[in-house]
View 1: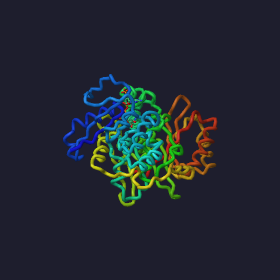
View 2: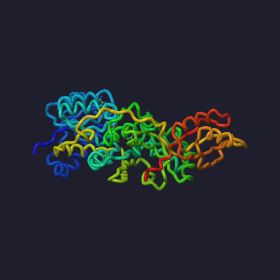
View 3: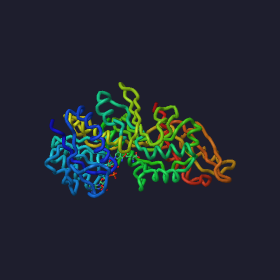
View 4: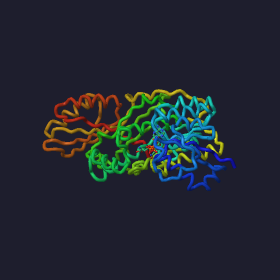
Length: 429
Ligand SMILES: NC(=O)C1=CN([C@@H]2O[C@H](COP(=O)(O)OP(=O)(O)OC[C@H]3O[C@@H](n4cnc5c(N)ncnc54)[C@H](OP(=O)(O)O)[C@@H]3O)[C@@H](O)[C@H]2O)C=CC1
Ligand SMILES: N[C@@H](CCO)C(=O)O
């Protein structure tokens, strides 16, 4: 049997994992793929680095584009990362040559997915990226193949393990964000420059891909993105008392006007919901469809083994000759802007740091009354001397009314520091 010959760029966590998995499970993979899958050419920044795997039988290339130009390969695997530079150049070169591409690069697919899809279609070259969303969870296969018949109402979930780890640790130990972030960096979960994770961008990249498959590609720069930096230990305590957990969610929904409502932000989810039990570095992907009903699957969203498992599953699909359209449809839909969230109605959690004296509550509620925001529940915890944290839970209100109320509340002399507003996401089961 003729092997499927792989040219692989990037020999870091995922690249080495792919080589190990292909070797360790060679017999099983060959049986399932119908032919052997062999890495025959590689590149990385350093040729001399010991990576703990034997590369003596592979051809070394000095740059990624030259791997994509290698005449003796059948598939390019891009595991360098980054939406620009060598990763993008290599993928474009391969697709232009008509070579199938497998990548784990969510930033590349989220930002340049439409242009790459055009290249893929023009050159009849498959582009697969199962590992780009939620690592070891077969998220793309779930939505693109498993749920291909349903018109989903929503798709999304907990898509960043670093944030979920930080929020879980803050809740269970009472420590603050900065403290837990330092620990997450020391343990190698968070990047040294953690903004991609904690400011929500990694979640946004993954959500954009899921939304593109479930609905239609979205214009990435129209996606509202908020991370977890402003969530405090006090918020996690309040949420707990209210019967909720705080999770960084990325969600996309088919909106009434046939657009796509999508956002990334920390939310309160009912403690009873399946997704609330997904803790630590685990990810969860959740869907709702009129025929398929609610589905939530969880697992490891990162790491050598889980991510390599997803990359190699794509390679097995290619070896089997599977014909999988990039976004699950034959045409290449143009990206659409996400719908504005202003009219979106939801209940909200508002946390305020206020002076602790008589009349403060009257000041606050008069602002809410003026913006037609009705309060469902109030709770108070002592903060510093003479100060209190107040948590308000609102009834359903349009997001723009909440935003205007927050601006007015922030201007009150009794309110200290910036209020925090979190959406209450009651629809997840
Ligand atoms: N790590 C994870 O758990 C997950 C990662 N991903 C994605 O997988 C991809 C790879 O991630 P990961 O393995 O963690 O990254 P690493 O940082 O561990 O590895 C990156 C690799 O790319 C190589 N590289 C960097 N620049 C170049 C270049 N100009 N030319 C050729 N090679 C280059 C590096 O070389 P050298 O080793 O010599 O420095 C290194 O081997 C990224 O897109 C990431 O987002 C997706 C899901 C999970
Ligand atoms: N940085 C990501 C892993 C790669 O997708 C996370 O923390 O989930």
